[in-house]
Amino acid sequence: MLAYIAPIVVFGLVIFVHELGHFIAAKLVGVYAPRFSIGFGPALFRKRHGETEYVLAALPLGGYVRMASRHDAETAFIEGGNEETGALKPDDPGYDPEAMIPFGPKPVPESRWFESKSLAARLFIMIAGVTMNILLAFIVLTTLGMKYGEVVIGTRVVGAVHLPANAPSLAALQPGDTIVAVNGASVRNWIEVRDRIDATPAGTLTITTNRGTVNVPVGGKNHPSASGVGASIDFFIPAVLGDVLPGSAAVRGGLRAGDSIVSIDHLPVQSWSQLQERVTPSAGKELPFEIRRGGRRLTFTVKPEATPQKDPVTKVMGSVGKIGAMPADFTSRQPLGVGDAVREGARQTWLTATKIVDVVHGLLTREVSVRQLGGPIAITRASVAAAESGLESLFLLIAILSVNVAVLNLLPIPILDGGQILINVAESVKGSPFSARTREYILRFGLVAILLIFAMSTFNDVASGVKDIVARLFG
Image 1 (cartoon, rainbow, N blue to C red):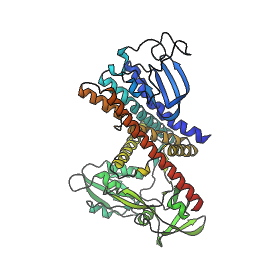
Image 2 (image 1 turned 120 degrees about the vertical axis):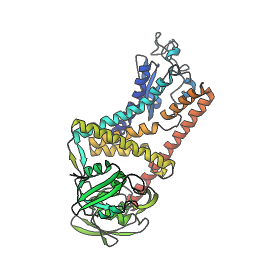
Image 3 (image 1 turned 180 degrees about the horizontal axis):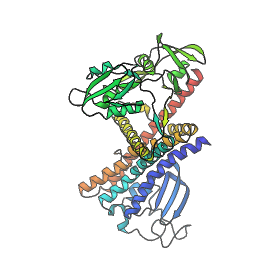
Image 4 (image 1 turned 180 degrees about the vertical axis):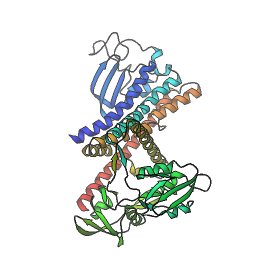
C-alpha cells in the first residue's frame, strides 16, 4: 500500500496546492472557472459545486484550472475538450437551466473572461500557483523546524582546507584544528562557524583556533568572498559509510552502510575528507579498500565512477571519481522557538530554490548531464523511501518537490506558467493578441517540449532501474 499511497500524497498535495493558487486568484478577480482538475485525460471522479466542477483525472501528471477564455479552442486539446462543444444538453444528467456554459445554456459574460482582466490581474492569476508552492514549502519547513528542531553539526574540528588561489593566508588553517571563535565571537558548532564566516563584511576574517589566529582578507578586489572562504573549509567527518546508493560503485565493490574505512590504496584514512582525496582523482581506477565491519577487517576493490562536478572553490567543471556513498550521519538536533523556526523555514526554502536554479542553469550550460534528470518513477521511489523513513522525511520531500514545481513552472515554456506570463506580456507590448493559429502552434510547441522532458526523465528512471537490477544480479 505504501508504494501507492506515498506518491499520491506527495505529488497530489503539491499539484493540488499549485492549482488551488490559480483557482483562488481567478475567483478573486472575477474570472469564471468551470473546472478544477487534478490530472489530465478521462475523469475518474467529478463533482460540481457552485459554478465549478471538481475533477480527479486518470493521468496524474499535473493539473489545471479551466478559465473562461476567448482562446478556449486553442487549449481544448490539453484540457479535456472545448467547453462549448462539450456543453451539457437539456436531457443530460447534471444540466442546469440557470447555469452558464458548459453546465447550462447561459453564455459567459465577457467581463468574466480571462482576457477581459487587466495585465496585472492576469499576472496575479498566473503567479499564484508558484506562490502557493513556495508558501507550502515554507510552512512545511517551518513546522518541521518547530517539531524536530534544527540540524546541528556538533563538531568544530577542521576536516580539510581547499586553499583558494587568492587566499594564501588560509594555509595557516590545518586539518585537525579546532575553531573556537570567528571574528572574536565564540562558536559552539559548525553551523555557527559557517554563519559567522558568511556574515563577515569586506575586510579581514579572523579565525581563532586551538593553535592560534588566522587572518584572511575577504571581499574587494583580488580577495575571495567570505562565503567563498567558508565553502573552502570542510568540517571533520569520520570515514564511516552511511547511505550507499543502489547500483553504485560502492555496492558493486562490496561495500555496505556502516563500514568504517581503514585505508584506501594502502594509505591510511581517518576522515571523510581523506576518503574524498583518495577517490576524487581516481575515476576508472581500481582501488583496494580496507574496511572494518563487525569487528573484522576486510578488503574490497572499488572502481570509482567518473562524474561531472563543479569545483566548489574555482567553479570550474571537471570529472571526478565517486563511489556513490554518503558519510554516516552524526548530526544532532537543537530545539527552535517559533521565531527561529520561521527564519530557518524561510532560509531553507530560499536555499532549496537557489539549488534548483543552479541545476537548471547547469542543464542549459551542459555543466549538469540530462542523465541526472529524474521522472515519475524516481519521484515514486523517493516518496516510498521517504515514507518508510518517517513523517519528517516524507514532508521534507513534499517541501523540496513543491519548490521544484514552483521554480520549473517559471521556465519560459508555453504551457507552463512562465511561458503564459511571457505570452501575456508580449501581447500587451504588441498591443493586440496573437492569432488563434499562432497561439495554438505556441501551445503545441510547449506540449512537445514537456513531453520530451517527461520521456527523457522516464528513460533515465528506467535505465537506472535496469542498472540497479544488473548490479544486484551480477555485482
